[in-house]
Each structure stands twice: as C-alpha cells, then as structure tokens.
Length: 67
Image (cartoon, rainbow, N blue to C red):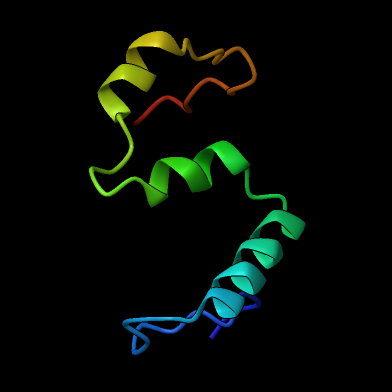
C-alpha cells in the first residue's frame, strides 16, 4: 500500500475514499490532467497526445560508444 492507500484488492471505494486518494495524488504532485485522462473509461488518448507533444531531448547525454 502506498501513500494513497491504494491496494489491488479494493474493487469499489466510497466517495470519501476516492476524494482522499485524489487529494493524496495531487499533494504528491501528480498532474490533474493525468488523473482526468486515467479516469476516462476509454483511457487516455495517447496517440493524440504523442502527436501533439514534441519532446526536447537536448538534456540527454549522448550514449557511450559500444565496444
């Protein structure tokens, strides 16, 4: 169990438990937009997100040459 009191053996939760978990996730700096995407029964629209978001990989170090 983590700080959100999340376990896999709880198929249904009451409203107060869901509010507490959501509050804990927001306090842990999980983005609200991510929570909304994950709450969607169809799941997040990953294809659309990846096509619209451009990665800035300038912070990555070059890979070490393989020998």
